[in-house]
Length: 344
Image (tube, rainbow, N blue to C red):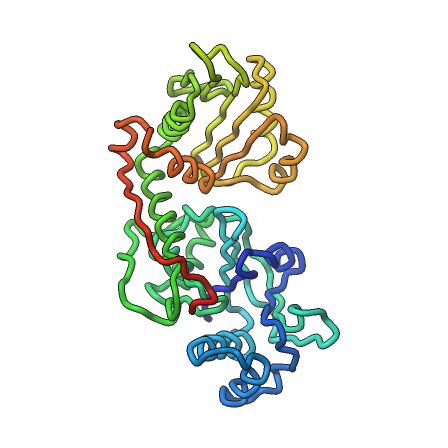
């Protein structure tokens, strides 16, 4: 069996369709022929050259390897990893059909395989850094094999999607099949920052980090002491002595499971108790769909921060965070070329 990385569009534009329809699609537009009738890599190259005459040698080579993998190498029983583009989460599924071709479907949904989603919205922070590094390949489809990745992901499934090793292997420097192309170095860096925050700001420490961010934004805050907080971790408001508006009630959750609707309801109740107009719910592991569906109805009352949002806030205000916080979270800014899928 094998473990495959698949992507649902450069911007995650097909992600919900993949999840809703329990399928992974080969989203190559202009590729209208049945790939099941292609017998050799050379025949596939001829087909791709006809469909994409503008492709250079490098892009033609990587496209051929990905299309061939989808149509010929994937097997029933293999697992697929689908990193989300919309939240810091990863979806895991099992392939349950051979390659399928539907000539009547609209582009780019003619080529697909059926999958059974084993788990969705697994927090990225549950995965070891070397696995996340492999998941950072810009390739749309590739096999993930380095550092016993398949066995480790299957072991995670048996342990509540938590890592089963004490110390992850060092992120490798050499190239291999899963990094045969540009890597999303920005995402790799964010994953490393996430692991650093997770290590340095456990439990109540995460509330302390959120409190520092709010103070850096100009709010006067009250940080509840560690222990039972009755749904209130932080109170914040602008102005002299914090008597301005909006008055904000903040709840911070550092656990490794996405939050469900009752936690949001608890925050709204706490807001009413302290006469706060606004609420901020911070969940390091993100939110279940029951909470995501409330974003529109609660837009004028509540904001939701997952780990990506929290990292965005840290980076935006890092220069004015407390010296103590920056000492615990040492970061530096670097510039690099912005490479993407088109530059492979």
